[in-house]
Length: 218
Image (tube, rainbow, N blue to C red; front, side, top):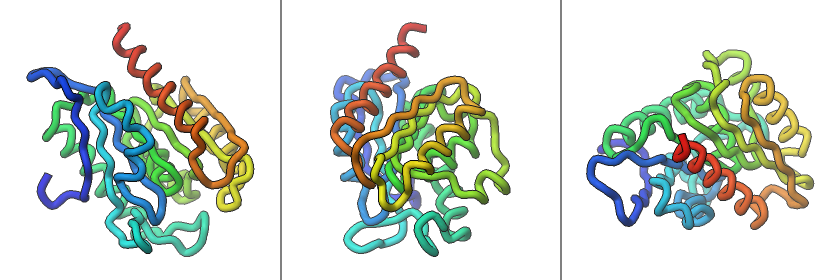
């Protein structure tokens, strides 16, 4: 993994040689970092490999994955670069660690949510599921990216009802977009702003555990 993005990884405590494990690639919001996003899902660290990926752009006291011209308007060059580097990171991580390629999940808040949805559309069924919290899908991703089938990708989308940055209608648009393309889409809203409420994260953890149990029962 030399030369890759900065990241933090948690491996299950009782990891067994030769076994493969589901993974969650976690991506933070603008001005935050990998430690912050991982802290939300720490209780899953013995059931999943958890990998928090840090954005490569310094943003205040934290980091960002891409630059913006304004809210809802990413800088195209830095966005394309972020998508490419994250896709490469996911590929390389699956080689470096005991990751089950059929159980790769993406989780993100804000910028991390935007990238989770965009990466799912780029990588298609290589991704098992995404949890996208308070984000949007850039228009150029919908119109210009080469989008793959996400029919078998499980999707959890959530949004704050009083989000002052990305209004609730954006969350509804995300839901409708994926509902037309995936067979398994959940959409939840919360009486909150642009943040992750405790109820939100509890629902995400429950959803991820349910996803894992579905695979175990197969």
